[in-house]
Image (cartoon, rainbow, N blue to C red; front, side, top):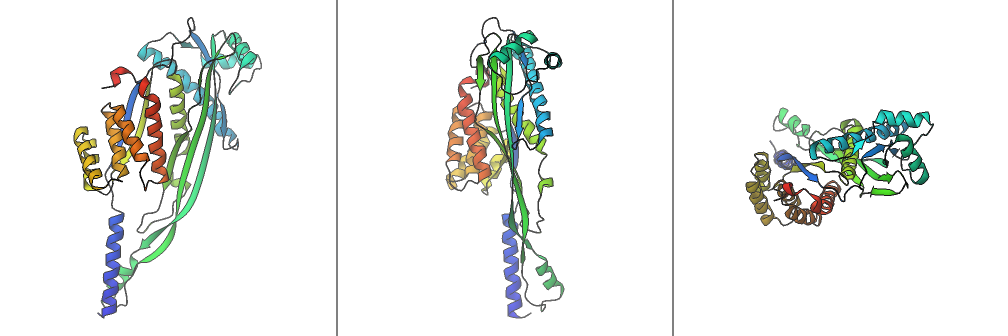
Length: 362
């Protein structure tokens, strides 16, 4: 084997080892945070019955009519189910007119009402339905897909060189481009509970937009191109966002259980990996110590800091969670996907802290 061939092979092997190291899997954990939100204020005295109209839904500038029609009904059905469930679990006097009856009465009067309704139209509909309040909503759903390319390495050059003997020319690593894809889904929602007599709002809710990212990229070695078929179904993501917004609105007037899920990934630090493993074993105290050790070595280890925020929530320490979420969102080197997750967690805890049921706190 000549010196050039040997040097080429050694270089190729070194680069291959580096690529494999970069692509090594890290520890992951799917965490679920659940708590009950108390209402922001009491229902007006005497208010016991409500009717729910189909939501007004706009998807990508009304380009997807079928999806809009489907979610107009699904979101209203979700709200009915949530109000009934909250009454059964946590008590309360509020009842909901059956959705089938609501749709039938409005159809008989040729009142095709959906979306945000106010004033006389709302009062007229409530009177027809024989309820004391009307719930209306608007959902604006936007789906943005972005495509890009990533470099992936083909190691067959090394195998070919070895297969033809040590004198088979220089070994190397072939680089090629493969497609990556990401999808950003945004839900902007607005809800109102309207008084049947005046048509004026009793409760209104227009939270910050809910966002969810999904992305697939080729492996750094032998990676294949990714397309939309590799992403999770759009309706599954829309469903999660609509349920989240609807549940938070319902929590304004009846106690309501809310749930948030996070997929955690360790950083490259071994203590961070041990912390994730400890979380899987439900040893949250040990996990916090491992994450703190990781951050002590790298002050910009945002993955470990965010995991500390999730740990804090699981231990019912929401002040600590807010501190860590704020810290993670302010760190350098955070990509767009992670930053969206960190900011959403920070804003959620900040908005909910004072309303979390005391039994769910330390």
